[in-house]
Length: 446
View 1 (cartoon, rainbow, N blue to C red):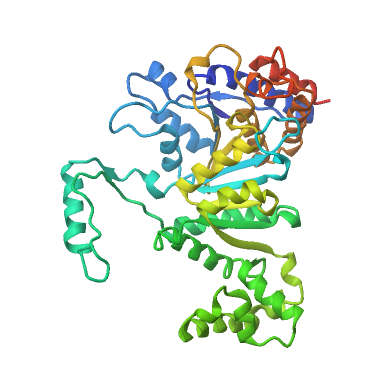
View 2 (cartoon, rainbow, N blue to C red):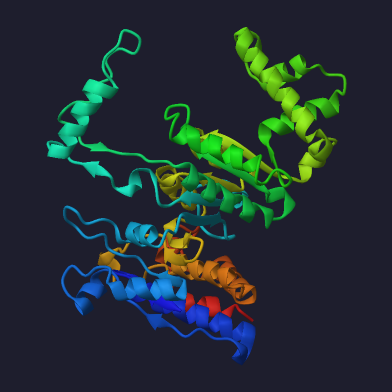
């Protein structure tokens, strides 16, 4: 198993995580299974071994490609122009298009939220597109000014209809690519995951800002629904389709127009053309899926709906139990996964995986925190829980379950590191060290 220790507190959290994972495998399988760890290098440690600026050596990339799996601690983003995030580079080089971030509450974990136990979501974040692709130019650059001039003069000139929509020449400028291929493969993996969940959690919510960015984020939503109603037609139902079917089930004599009026807010204020479009939508749904999804059959399908990005931040706090899998684009997913993690204990308890079709990298989701490095005090929970995801990906569920039990019992018994200890009521004194937290987890395997 290739592993990258990580920078900063990686020196503390990785040995703790490795110890827990090894103990879980031994406890679950005895001598039948074990992990042979293979150290590879990235970040500051890679520069020490391979030379200056060798933050991501080819040897490391070759090993990840050969084994198809790896786990890593946090990595420093190199400072300076032209140096991109090593985490982003690993995702893009290996085409790890799905960033998977479970956010689940462990009883006893201190949280600012009144009912954190109600939140149990998995964020599926598209990893290879959006503004994270890094196609941008600084203010005053030759290419940037040429692009701005082209846009202002030829593509978005001022018109009486749209007014003056011009980009200032002193602006930095970036490109936000969202493709149909990238969107649909992300949604496909999210739906496949939903199909493995218990029935009450079989739901995928497409999170977007399509009301503003219609041809990027709005297209993500549209492509997600297109995939849902074609490739997963037998397994899925959209929220809007469920309304149409439910209306017909409750009132078999309902007219197409009354059904359309029930599902479309402000129907009576629409133009006749738009009203006709909604009526046609109702008719198409009833004609195409009534036999396979009607009469309550839709309730056994994966529900696919969508929400505007800014509203979902409120809804996971005010109505957390209504959501299960949140599928979204890169920037939205970055914000959303960190916000959700804060509700259930913070990034110290937030695992993450980056998964493609042929490779997966599991990682701590927090930063390097160099001022805490070597002090044996930080919470190793993020990388340990990422190890749980790794074991589940490998099919070693028994070992994964042991670790989840160990973490749950340790927290419930207030055996925690300082970040959790200081937030508990009353505060835990003294808190466990990083290495001691690992030992506490292992203690509860039996």
